Image (cartoon, rainbow, N blue to C red):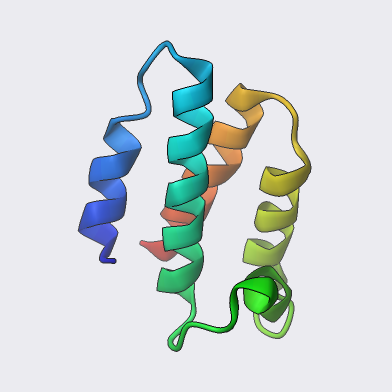
Length: 85
């Protein structure tokens, strides 16, 4: 998926349904991980593989996955997308 498609999905996050928003955020997160990696690693290794390079996206990914607040998850996801640009 391209950065343009990720941006399109990101714009759809302004919805009231928290469940739908979290689902969409997770889909975007998966696409961001694929975009960061030149070749797509096995799903269980995607976040771990971020450790091998720059530690910043790895930290953002860990924060995204462990955060319970939807707003803070969105902030981490936005930072990951900004990192791609």
